[in-house]
Image (cartoon, rainbow, N blue to C red; front, side):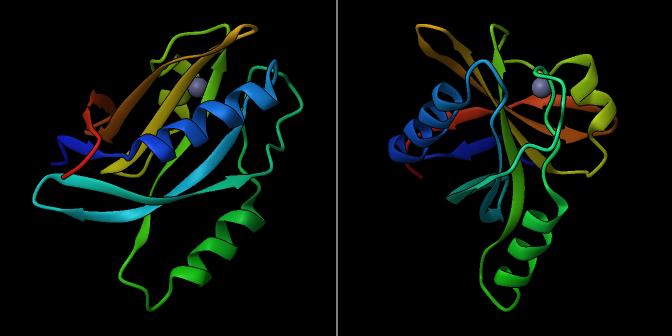
Length: 140
Ligand SMILES: [Zn+2]
């Protein structure tokens, strides 16, 4: 089970900036990285088109998803998770997020954002039908 996430400050800022730029809509994207010894390490973030029509939802464009899986074929990195923002919300998984989650050991990064800027970033891993909070470290 993954219990720790390594996310550099630069990547953390990238999520915050995307959340601010998409406000009041949700931004979303996929996380490329590695998983080993209980630690997930994010290597890069891939912003995706949000196909959801409602402002408080996200739906990653499946074409972006497939493109990234193809791109990572044969690479030492894999698709380890997704991220999205909660405009005027909490850095925690919503009931809808829990319904939308299915893949075990998949990371979920949730950025809280308000009109005056990005707030807290929450990191979770999905397993046994629920989200488990992860500790975020800047380096390994
Ligand atoms: Zn959400």
